[in-house]
Structure formats: C-alpha cells, structure tokens
Image (cartoon, rainbow over all chains, first blue to last red; front, side, top):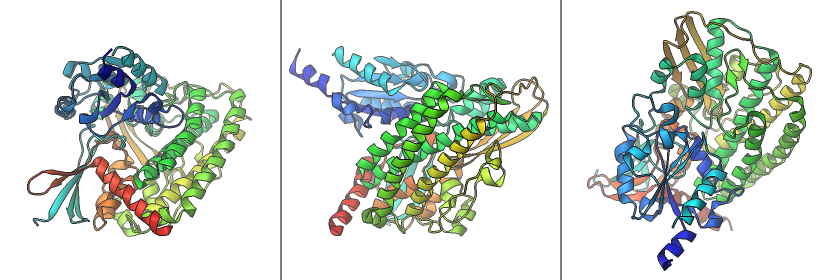
Length: 137
Length: 398
C-alpha cells in the first residue's frame, strides 16, 4: 500500500450532491456529523467544494435540470474519486422514477461505486458503506 | 452600477436541506435586491399522483418533503375524508396528532441547530441535533422508520401505538423538555445571539399579510394564523394548547416562537396519550371502500405553515387532479422583504429564519462580480462571514 492510498483510507472527504430529493436523505447525511454518529472520528468530513472531495455522495432522483450540474460537479472532482448513490432515489429513481422530469438514475449518468439503499437509509448504513469503501482502497 | 455584485446562494450547499438558488444583488456590503430560481427539485409529483391509486399517493406525498413527511399525508387524508364524508375513529385522531406534533418537535430542533450553525454556534448545531435523536427513536419505536413514517391512510392510521409504549414516550418527552429548557435558556440569555438576531430580517404585520406568509414566520410578526386553531382537524379542537405569537417579526422572534411551540407540542402529545388510554387498542381505521366523485380540500399545519391539498376525484381509484401548496412557497418570497437593506453577513440567517423547505429547491452559494461573472464568495464564505460577525460581537462583549 502506497502512502497515498494509506492516507486516503484515513481521510475520505465527501461532497454531498442533493438532487431532486425529499430531504430525508440530506438530513440523515447531516445527522452522521452529529454527536451520536460522529462520522469525523473515521476521518470522514463533508466538504463544501467538489475539488476537495474524494467521494461524491449523490442522493435524490436526478431531474433534467440537475443532470448537467451533476456532470459538472463530477468533472470537477479530482480523480480517482468514488461515487456513492444514497437512498432509493439515488440507486434507482425510487418513487419518482416514473416522473415527467426524471433524467435517469445516477448510474446511467456517472459511474457509481457503491449503492446505499433505503428510504431513507439509516446513518449507520452510510457509516458502514463508507467503511467498506475505504477497505477497497 | 459597476459596484453592484451578485451573490448567488444555492443550488448545492452541504448545509441547506433542499436545492434552491438565490441571487443577492449587493452594493458593497448591502443587499439591494434578491432574485430566486427554483426547479432543481421538480419531480412532477402532482402529475405522478394522477397515475397512482389513492393508497399509493399517501407514500408519494410523504416524499414531497422528508421533514414535513406527516403534514402532506395529513392534508391529503383530510381531503379524501372530506370527499367521502367519513368520520375517523377517535384513537386514530389522537395518533395523528401525536405523529404530527412529534414531527414539529424534530423539525424545530433541526431548525434551531441549523440557525445556530449559520450564526457560528456550532455547539448549538451539535446539541440540538443530538437532542433530536430521541425523537427519531420514538418514531422508530412507533412506526419502524426514523423518517417517512407511513402512518396515514384514508380513514385512519395504519399502525396503532400500543399502550405498552406510552411509558417510554412519556419518559422521553419529559427528558426532552429539560433539553428544550436548556436550549431556550441558551438562546434567550445570550447577548451575542440578541445582537445578531434582534432587528435582523424584520417582517411587519402588514408585510406578512401582503406576502401571505404562513406558520412561525407569520406568528413571529403577531399574525396568529394556525390551521390547528382556525379550522381544527383530527383531535386538535378537543385539546388544550395555545398558539404562540411574538410581535417583533425579527429573527429572534422567529426563534422564540419555534422554541416555545415545542412546549405546546409536548403538551398536545401528553394530552393525547392520556385520552388514548380510555380508548381500546386496535380501533384505528374506518374502512373506505370507495371514494366517490367530488372535490376535497384538506389542510394541515406543517412545522413551517399551512399545507394545502386539493383533490378532484371521478369515482375511479386515482385522483383526476391533485394540487399541492406547501408553506415555503409563500414564505420564501418574504426573503425579498427581510433581506433587502441588510448586510451580506445577515443574509444567511435572514434566509434561514424562514426555515425554507427547499425540497422544492437547491444549494450552493457563490458570489459573482456583476459585470464579469467572476466568483467572489461561495456559500461557505457566506456562512463564514456570518460566523465572523458573531465572533466580532463576542469579542466586543468580552
């Protein structure tokens, strides 16, 4: 294991992209930062700019208006980067997949490395997914 | 005009819950105009609802907004019950009130936390969200899920709250009351919070009426508008509670209204539990076999204001037209009034004070030069400005 992957393993920085979601996932992601789950003890941190991020966390169904922005954010992330689809809408489009503005689940737009199903997934699910992701480095 | 700058807030920002895009036009430090754009969160729900059966629409409207995920099914159930002229069992009414009020508590705690973050009090953010966890645990005990409870259906509720769970609910609520006391004390007595929030983002009574603002935003300006009192639904008419109002209309008043509303919610839940003890378990659903042709209007008081649902049916098993109006649609417009004339550092908290439900919007804040379009500030910098201002005041107070 090189120095780079060793240090990446201990400090996955996450950029959160909320598509056309219902907020539940967004709230649960924020919940991970708060004292009960405290994701920062694993070195995982939410960052404000995609350029600082190692992981792109996408939740919500992606509508026609979000799609170009998602692609832009993905372009800005320094590669190699992981993409995680969070929640039922992120994985498949969920209940909104039949909607008139739906532009495809995340994996049809950008390559996805991990899926976290649930509506919304519990914060524990996100912790466990990010831990498993770190193991693959 | 060469000095005018544009600061966009939105669409993708880690600390706003839903995507919405605001453009602040600034001259120096002062905000001179505000524009906003929505649509990043458009999911075509009203159209989707026409393709689903009534049973399925409950799960769909629940996912309009994750934080007010009871208010929408509540209003939809009210409208269907108006069409089919059904009276729901008493126990179901109390369960509906309990779920609605627990949701109000968790939503207000969430807001207190976010407001604290915008002001640079990250401790308040962490604490408020920590105290919110027991409420989510109660939801998990009652419904099996932390958010999106799937409790509502036409004619009643889908799950009972068993008598054996009452003790746990009561105990958690009494502990929560102490935590709310602590938060209220921290907000009410802190001179820095007073300095940051008093006379900031003021909405007068007339402004509220002009903009048709709803919920705590309106109540903080002395407009005692609350659907639970004005047109009681479920069991709210038979319970003893007060509509909390404040007169000042600034950010502080909005915080005060939300904090005090949590006590009223706790009161409502305690009374509902007491009344439920006299009603046998299991009587929670009046089966509606058929929804006749008709027009139904239902509303419910969400944590942010009145949620309104209009449903037109034609005797089949899905709505012909389903119109939804969420409170933030009205409240976000007040940002124009409350923000213009303020400094940039107060913009973040003025916006947050409305508790905008962006599930209908987007997030990220970037500041651009008006002429060149070059970015000057991003969302983080904007919040940082707000936090810096608090730090300055803190140092002065010392």
